Image 1 (cartoon, helix red, strand yellow):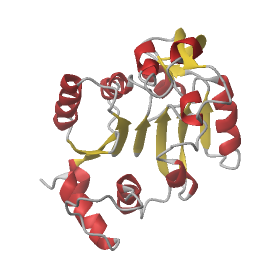
Image 2 (image 1 turned 30 degrees about the vertical axis):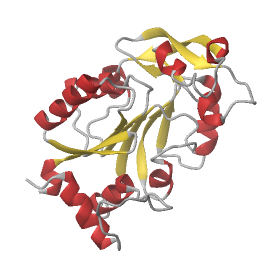
Image 3 (image 1 turned 180 degrees about the horizontal axis):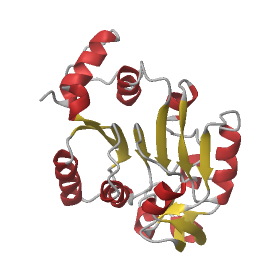
Image 4 (image 1 turned 90 degrees about the vertical axis):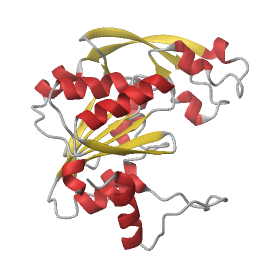
Length: 243
């Protein structure tokens, strides 16, 4: 079995890089996810993406360039109306993408999200934050001492991942991208429960408890994935694609 670190080394060699331990970080980060996508789907006429938590489609988005520089179809999901409006504008020129203005939750219906008020004096990344868990937002307190006063509750429509898959007749996904501020592992479990086994999965793990991160890794391994922590994310690839 070839581990994802070995795959990373191979890809970096092909693109003129060498993977080694260094004391100082380079000025530019190496985009491992982009390299994996380029390698695995270079001969694919059209790839399918499912992005849960798409925000505005640009700010801090690890798949924006992947989408715009490739031939992708798929579903992008964003629950907050103002960010969904920006997302529609971002990808208005890509007709193969379908956008959903909802949250992905355990059940269909309406759900409450905690979000930061639209205060222009705040950094944009803070204004993009929304979570089912208020404590996730409170993690910004060291930088924004009055963050409690800036949190508001919004009610948004919700859909289970199984319902989303059924609605759009999703049969296979090449790339699953998840960024839901603490709900990522739940969505990953939903995907596997729906027998959805994407070729590549990228999701944020920094809001997960250490024991949950370990559980998540065990689940990925049980489903045939190799994985690697890259910054705030975990990148997972089906072992059958890299052996």
